[in-house]
Length: 402
Image 1 (cartoon, helix red, strand yellow):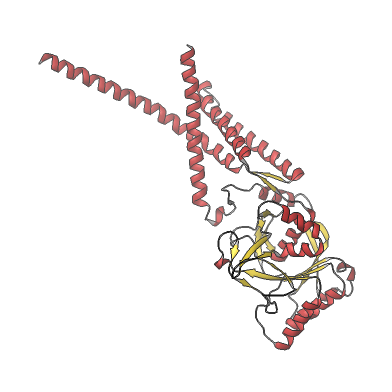
Image 2 (cartoon, helix red, strand yellow):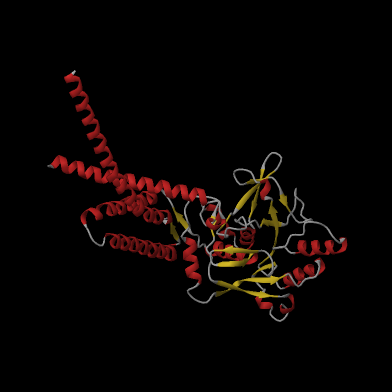
């Protein structure tokens, strides 16, 4: 009796393990096959769906956006030429901002006189950060690039102007979820370290926050998008509101171009995305992705227990099996979501469990198919055994008679 019970118990755990393994294979194949499609572009490099996107979206809808008075956005669209942009920079600099971020690239020279005035206005500012773009088409391994588009007035060999790259972590179709603090530009015999635009701005105004960013492991950070709004002014409004500029971080850029998808908005200005990155660094509210070996073991264990439940329940109950299993699925989903949401909001921890939810959704179907396969497989094996046994008897009978 004990031996039979042991065999049944072993078979129970074995069948559940096989069902779980098949479910994981199917989900992994589905994720790897659809990862390149724009519809599934939210899937990150680890092959999981970042739950932080959902948490950030819910947070952005909880109430009105908070005004961040530390950062001011200045619209450059009304400037007709480089001369007016130079005047805008001089006007802002005269009001003593903490740092100026110029999110405009002047790749080529146009008018010699205007170009000289613009360059002089920029070089006069001691706390300005200009932008550059690393050419993604020439990207190599290990975050190394071989080409960089700079402003015409920047000397690549030796220049005191502070510049940061404005490349965003998106292919155009996928939402901007992360930022890369630093990348490397291939020189002749060495790599030149370039920091992102937001990191360079923080470096100028808060060296401590910048050093904390560099001390973090890895080179990819989730942007902690917050429901924030910022003062947006034109050059005509500065004279009447100098207090909005003095001692502030001032970003100059376009309000009408460079729109991107983010977890909290279908269209967000690139300039505003940089402000979100700056706020993340200054506040030190980094999102820590909890995706280690213990998290994976916990997810697998949870899936295995649910698989056991799906395999045992039909054998123990005759009615309400489907309802009970679906109720268990919904309960686990809600508990996982609210637990993850609590950890995210209180401790900035993002637990990866989206794959677990997908596996649980597949398990119920695989368990039904597997049960049918086992049932008909057993009948087929029994039929074949009986057929072979009968044939042996017939052959033996014929041999005895001969």
